[in-house]
Length: 278
Image (cartoon, rainbow, N blue to C red; front, top):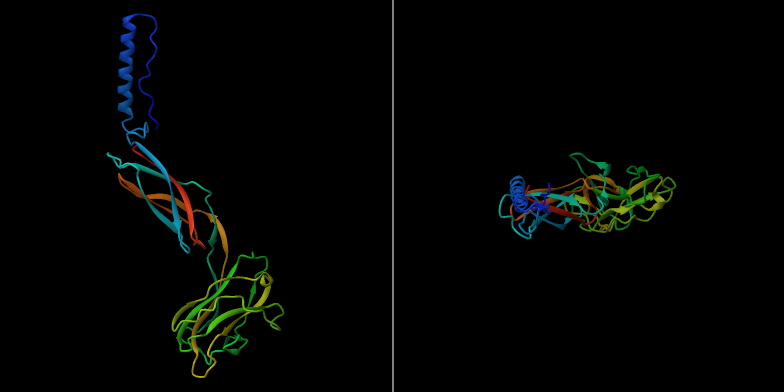
């Protein structure tokens, strides 16, 4: 609540000394009453009853929130202030990633499948057609992303990579690689390719396959796969999930802005803040 003004100083009517004395008594009583009722009201920034400002919160790529710390321009000398924080821009984030859809292409459970020799040029997974899969991407936006992930138990090839191709004629012909990146698969453990936008021509009910490439193509050198899955992610937009302050002291405060899902790229959010002694 804003503090009412002090010293209303009503103009004296004609009436001589008695009226002037009454005016002075009224003014003094009014000021005392206001100061008693509003000891820490938002009457001035000079006495540090209220301070305000803006700040930028960064949500890192892949993150679902970001935090910041603010130091007050002047320390509050008395009680710890109350702090309000709000978003000073559109609350809509247009570069979030909705949860992934994963389709298992190969699942060895506790077992593994060895591909040896690992091919140097595009070759269908294990040289077999039985691992092909169908994706119905009709009516999906062009921003949908596709990638591969999985688990490798051992890899002495050291050069091999994986890619995806699609077919619009039930497997009679195949596209070029969709472009998942050429980083060699790891010696062991989880692998994850980069994600690529699904080509517009592939936004149909079509056939897909995993291919191996860049391997040594030499007997004795290969890769043991335990799991391979295709991942679809959908970049979209959504409102900020929440904004609020965390800890507060007489010298500053911390706050956080949350996104409902991970952001694709580093994102800055402008916030405003108000600190006051209630």
